[in-house]
Amino acid sequence: MKILLINPPIRLGHKPSFFPIGLGHIAQILLNEVHKVDVLDINAERLSNVKVLERINVNSHYDLIGTGGLITIYNIVNYIF
Image 1 (cartoon, rainbow, N blue to C red):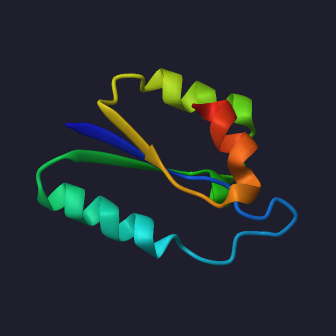
Image 2 (spheres, rainbow, N blue to C red):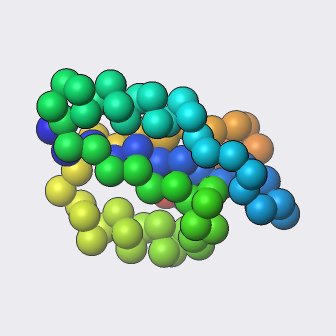
Image 3 (tube, rainbow, N blue to C red):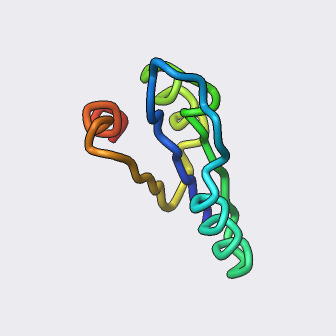
């Protein structure tokens, strides 16, 4: 199964200061189960909503797309999905 994990932006006014450890753990578990996993770290790359959709559409052959996030970024996650 081909899976995309998305780390949404957290604080748009601040530079990212940490690696999403939980996302890394999930990715490794999926890799151990012989899945193909890509991670899109919007928080680190500071991509616009349009760029995120372009990235996802270029690789639209994902079987599953997963994300998480805080309520403060709900509008961004809702726009993407």
